[in-house]
Length: 179
Image (cartoon, rainbow, N blue to C red):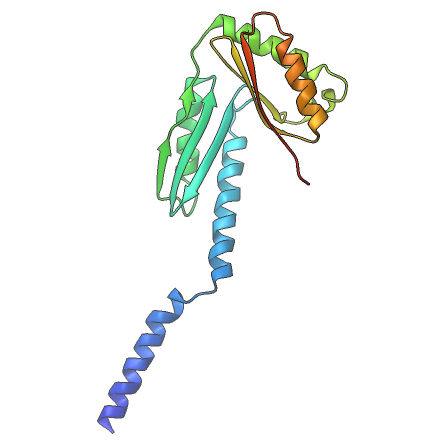
């Protein structure tokens, strides 16, 4: 009789300890997806995040690694600060590059923005809060980042950026929206 109680207690203790670890994998995936969405939302809603910045991240085992380039030095710290507050984030590794402060690059940023978003068909994209084509300028070299609806939009943006006076090179990293 005493042995049955010990055995039953052992099984009950095992079930209490094991059941949480056997939780539905869909719940873990759902928590992961929620954390990803929250991190993305926090980054794109930063007050000074603009079309001249490019932020991306990787989330693994509670660690967020931030990547990209920013034109404002304060944005690097702001990005880390808001991501640290997200539930499920234990550590933040900040690999965001601060672009050199340069009047020459600032003129190219503005001229490239105008050249791209004045294009017929691309002008509709400029109406978004943060337009989808991000213009990264470093020492006269332009990189286009983001997601556009069509291959034609990516090509038009690339051609427009190439036509800006003072641009040394243009790298087109635009991706096509698969929706």
